[in-house]
Image (cartoon, rainbow, N blue to C red; front, side, top):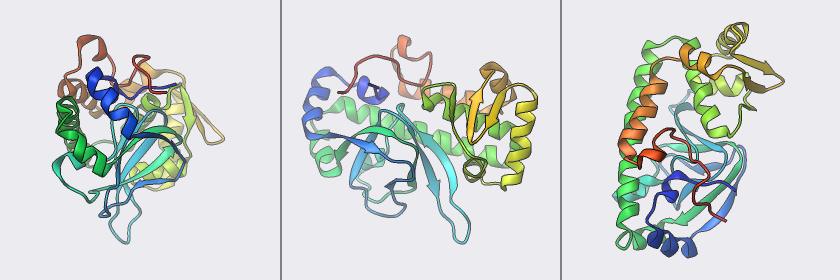
Length: 246
């Protein structure tokens, strides 16, 4: 069983009120949890796996704007009364999520001030991360950006190894596959990762973080400051074995 950090920090009374009107769902690799410019029907709180936030600009391939795992939610913009999805959301590693229909969320918000606060703070964190992503794409080297991307996936994968093809990483970074191959080879030659048959094994997390651009640590700090969790929960932006959903 896994927890979602937002749900885990809801007041107990609010969580008890919400659980009966939501449901657990499975996330499948490649599934569109949200479609850009389409109506958002549910808010998803991932418990396992991770989801990529993407934007599409024809005729180009989708570009990654961020990742969401058990530290966040897909559809938090519903808090603002905005029904249409500003970005797309595609499952990159399957797992489980807790889902609440949009109409149920709207009705429940008046009785759940804790949820309102958490979603509002999370929206601000997402905005900060998106701003950082834009600057990162412009200023930082592909090797540093790849290291950052691998760390982001590692935080959400639940272990030191995970599935990630060069094609997927190229899409996430908005570059050609050959560029990812060269950058990944450099990280592997440095003993930071091992890449084989579409799986990445992180051998040296500290070294990978040193190779990453400063955006990774900035995003971690922005999450910690923005969410204002209790000190015991602020050491890492990923959830621990606290209150679990069953």
